Length: 402
Image 1 (cartoon, rainbow, N blue to C red):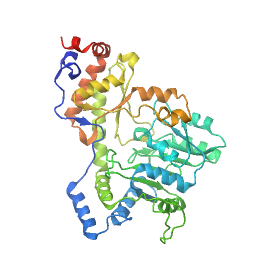
Image 2: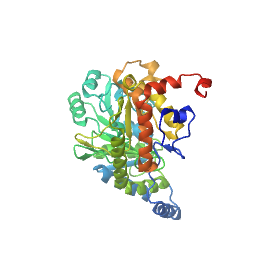
Image 3: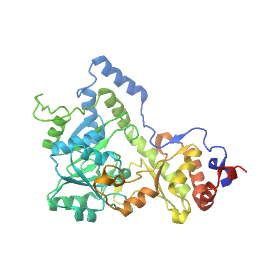
Image 4: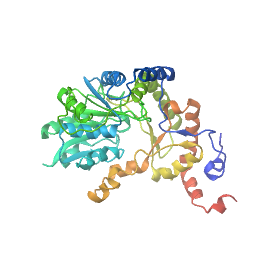
């Protein structure tokens, strides 16, 4: 273990870890079972077009989400667009900026106008009071994001949506396995969208799904995601091709079967980070709790540069030198990206502060308990000596090697 900042790889020391550890390593599950399912699909000759594995995956996701309907798709970005099209949304969509750019892109791709709203400073999720102030006659929907798999204040948002006669949807890309006041994420609002990207807690290589209890909406979603075809196979309107393949469904089934184990592992890693990182000025591990249960897919820390003396970006650089590849989630905010920064310039101070301070640490299947301890201790060293790390990093290269 390193004794001082002189030993940091950033300043010429040997990297802490012999192998790279990253955020979002896939949760694969039982590989042998995956291969058996894949062989079944290959033997059947049906590899796509809503085959039996896709139907089985949809049934299991709906059960996990506590809803009646699930339509699996090739990715969550298209699932968001398909949902918006099927729901007949028009005009403006109020949403947070502290999300992956896929959220506004999915709306903008349809010609809708994202209206970015600031967030709660603790959760990073939509601030309901600010949402209400943004509602105008042009508003077509409210789209919340369960950031870092923690549910939005869905009850407050639903009350606002109902009072204004607006549909409420949720981008639940990260949140399968989380719960809102005891209720599984998936049944909040009119519909929600999950992601099964390789980095998510349930991995289908690449995939997504719309989940809902609204039968008519589910029928329209299913048609739009399959070229506009209804249950009889007739084309009744404009659609696209967003279907999930049987191979993706096979991986999704196996990964979903491992969900409870994955969450338990995530919780253990998060608890270890909490114990190891306690008491460092300017460093705070984001804790989940209150009325919600979280799948703990993300171990999020905030670096306050005014207290720590070091900026989050330098911490990321220093960790990367140690073979620890943390990530900012999400930075910069979507309102600072194009085309939104030009089309609708807006100041969102809470979003901008969080986007500037937050990073995600490796967790889950991709890191061992011992590596969590090592990562925590090197992070304590970097942040605990933040001012000196910053000062040394600003020296000319020749001076740092002398």
